[in-house]
Length: 246
Image 1: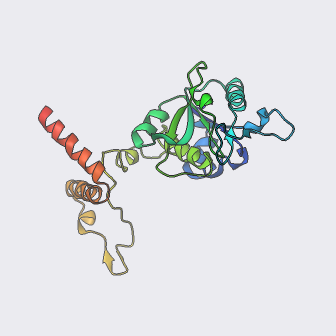
Image 2: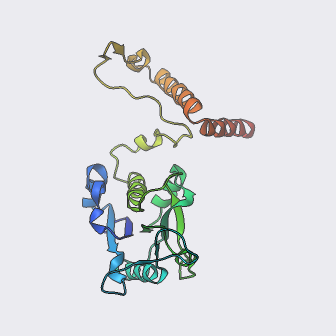
Image 3: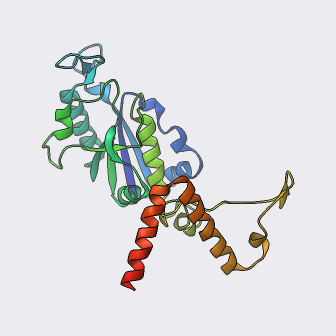
């Protein structure tokens, strides 16, 4: 079976993969061939006996910078070994923020190549390189800094894999998740019906599907309004636009 989606990860720590990607639903989908994971050790392309991949920054400053010649060789090596990638991504705190819309976009690609930086980052020239297929697209998990790109790569991959056909048992699950409707998800409850003196909301055990649907939408709207006013404002604006168009 040929995998329908592939992620190739360039990293100094290939032993970190698949990690959690090898468990639960992503792990089962990996074993079933729904997606494929390849890793390539950047040190394979080092040019000295010490396996050095970085050097001091021009202009001075703390830390080390990953060398463009070594990274370029690693990217070319990965594409020679595993095939050209639809998109090449560098996980970087200054990149475009990863959100559900971008995840859906990336999950629709055939393959991704993910570069995991370390130290103070990578030489800008490898990001801008005018190689066939362009340079590297920078993507960020959020406004914080990690020690390297491996955890970010795993998060991006898992988010994409969940959207691949055949990974989740119920496709409707995705449709009702946070961000899919423009809102955060409504509260969820399960058995027991009473726990620590608190009962499950009566509407959820009423058997009235339309009332449940309305309650869930109202709860999602209120949670979004309180916790993510930026999302709520966008949601309200979109509803107004839809009303004008109808």
